[in-house]
Each structure stands twice: as structure tokens, then as C-alpha cells.
Length: 597
Image (cartoon, rainbow, N blue to C red; front, side):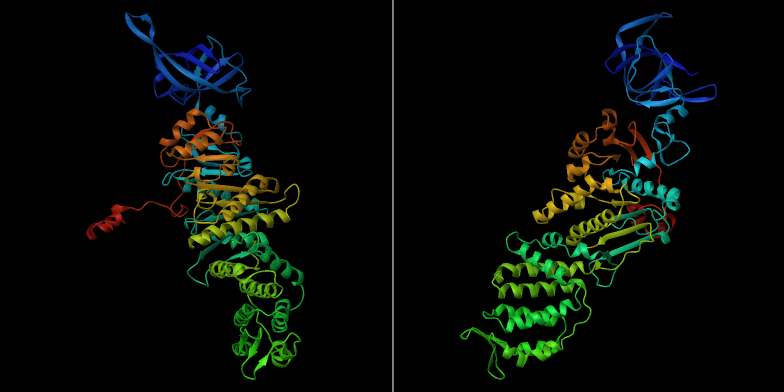
């Protein structure tokens, strides 16, 4: 039984008009020990139709001033409310969608709070709770098995509570499922502002924290797979290689390395062969000598470096000339054998990192291309300078070839202390690393999952950036669009958190499945949501600009209906490091400071 509060007096399409009793406008009512909410906007009522209860949400109310009733010699206006059906109860089970509509004179009843929770909670035993419904203050269990099997978007202006929502969502997941997850899933978070590098998400023994810093050389480094670094597409975009000359140059470099990578001392033999080619060429190039000097200096060959200082270009003879013994190097190689052959044969190089190897191989490749007339020096030289510049920052934050710690459930990668160039480049390399590594090892159907969480996602998924080359921006967006379009079939899922969803590629936003929407006031952001989220109704959309801190609209494919939840705040040890500055404490007088601490 329940409290009858009125009856249906009109049905126009899916809009239902009810005449309600005057007593129904009380905020809270109690009946037979059960608590009920009175009739007001965004409350739920039940309309009895036969053996079914049609559930409606109140969208508006008004007084009918044209009609009135005579009662006890008092003039009373009729209170009417407008409601929209959202589903129905049959055999005590809620079914979402408009299948049945009420008819005139059908009675309307208030709903018990316990029954309202059944509308949103399918499996009460799981108890995956991150917050309570805003008005009813009922804890709602989210369908975690559907939620984390999808791409998630968490949007909201700064200070709206989206960081707490992100942290709460995954904290509850790890608290309840960490042991069950084991080695079946991997989680990684790109943290642009360093908000999750302390006690968030999970205990320290089960997570790895990398605090990347471009201002120091011996800080934490992200272990990148060699195949992700020695990739022609990546290097071409990374160094902004031009299509006609520089891109083919890098392709020859990558292909040449791959051809001899398994041979012992491949780089050393490459250097030795280049010496012979430079000093035995029929058409020697003066630029080749300068590049060769750079190579021997980079590998620490002091003796050869000293010998090369004695060599100069003799333009009149179109040959290299050694001033000590007035020796000219001819194409027959005899002068090379008499002068350099022994020193070159004794050349050794220490183990070099792969960044230095790339620079060395680029110099060697350019030498051979110049000798064979494939390129002009002035066309490739700008590329070499960009390689030097880019790698100087990258070598401080990534290491090539080392194995990552696969025993950790969560990897937090902080980019707070990285410069802007690295913040643009590194997320792409990291995402590509995780995507290809997971894609190449997963079975069909997937036997494991990869979850990439990107905080402040507008930093790398924006279409408006003017600080980077167009080809790089296109490649970056294409990669993330591929991940979000194709990743689900491989068991890779992305969670995006952003202040400005309108700055993110619409293609990416449209592929998200579930949304946690905090306060947004910018019209472009609201317009994007209107055009990409089909499950967001008008009533929920109208609430977004005025949501309080920590309150959000939850909607998407994992939820039958949009709901408004107040997300529970994490305790101080688990909160993201994004709290507002306490100016009262900061600016307190010395004598009052102790009282505010």
C-alpha cells in the first residue's frame, strides 16, 4: 500500500497531466512506518494501471486558474503536475522505457524510498557505492561490471569535484576488486598536475609512481618498448619530418637498422664502413667530414677525433687533404689504409643508449646519402637539429628497452614537472606503448584488460592547440581515436577527465559510453553534451550549470536512466592533491595561526 496523491486527468503523447491533492505538497510524509517524499519537481510517482505500476518523474507543476471547485465556501484552485513516464514495475522488477501509458482516472501514488532505489540499482548485493542520490539521499550501487567495460568521461569545471569523483570511482573499485583483478588487468593514469602521487587509489605496495621531471637527468623514467621508439611513423611525426625528403631519410635509417640489428657489433661495423666510404669516395663531400667528426666525438673515440682534426677539404683537388704529410685521399683507398685503417679497426664503443644511437645513425645515414647523391645537406640538416633538441628532453623522462614492473596493479605517471613540449609528446608515446603492447598480446576474446586514465585530457586531445605542428596534432588525435574506436574489442578502455569537453575531439567524446557530468557553464561545453550524449534528458541537462560541488549527473549505456548523485568525499589521505587554497589560514596573523591549523 501507498499514499494516493491524485489521478490522471490528461495524456498528450508521453506527457501526463495529473490532478493532485493539496496535502501532497508536503516535503516528507510517513505512512505505516515508511518514509515518502512529497510531490515536487524531479520526484517520482507511481500510476497504477491494472496490475502494473507506471513510474513517472515530475517535470513541472501549475495551478489551473480557469477552473475551480466549491468546497466549504472557500475558493480553491486545482493543483496540476506534469510528469513523464520512465518505466514500469512488473512482478516487483523495474523495466526501463515507455511501454505502457496511463489513462484518464488512473490513480497516482507516492513511492517508498526503498522502491525508488530499485529503479537505479539492479544488484543490491554488489554494493558498488560512490555516492547518494541528491534529493532522496539514497545510496546507489553502480553496475561496475558494465561501467569498467566501457570508455568513461568525467567532465566539470575546476572546483566542481571531478577529481574526487575520478579518485572515488577507482578507489572503491580497488578496495572491492583488487584481489580478484590480480594480473588480469592493468591500470595506468596520466597525471598532468601531480594530483595522484601520494596515497590515492590503492596502497603503495600495489602501485608504481613515476614522477617525471625534465629539469633533472637522473629522475624517474618511463620504460618505453624499443619497437615504439624505433618506428618510422613515430619518429617522422616526433621530429616533424617533411614528406618529400626528410621522411624517406628516416625510413632508410629505420630500415637499415632493422636489417642489421641482429648482427654482432652492427653500429660499430657501420661506423667502420662509413670511414672507408668517406675517404674512398669518387666524389667526396666536405659535409661528410664534419658529420664524421661528430660521430667519433659522440662515441668517445679520442684518437680518431684527433686524427680527423688534421684533415681538411682541399677544394682545388676536390679531395680530403692531410697537412702533416701533404697526403691526398684518393678513391683507391690506399691513403685510407695507410692512415686510418689500423685506428678504425681498433675502434671500440661502449654500450650507448638508444637516444645517442639514433643521433649517431642519423649522422651516418646522412653521410652515405650525401656520398650517393640521394639528398642535399641543407634539406636534412634542420631535421638533425630537431632530433638533437627533442631527444635532449625525452632522454630525461623515458628509458628504452627496460622492462616495466608488471607486478603492480596501477601505474601513476606524473607529468607535473615536465615542460610543455614533453607534455605534448610523451602521452602519445605512452598511450601507443600500452595500446600496442596490449593489442599484440591479448587473445580473442580478450583474456585481460588495460585501463588508461587521462586526467586533464584536454591537454592532449584538443583540436585547438597552436603550439604544435599540424601533422603531429593529426597523428596524435588519430591514434587516440583509433584506441577509443577499436580498443574495446581488444579489452582496452579509456577514462577521460576534463574541464573543457568542448576542446576535446568530438569524435573521441562521441565514442565514450558513460558520463559523470559535474557543473559546466560554458555554452560550447553544454552544446557538445547535447549533441553527443543521447541518454541525457532535458531535465538533467538543465541542472548541469547549477550543480553544487561534488554533485554530478550520471548517464550512459550502463545506466537505464540519468541520475543525480552527490559523490562521497574521500578521507584526507585518499583525496587528490587538488584542494583549494585556504586563504584564511594562509593570510592569518601570527597570533591567530595556531588556532587555524
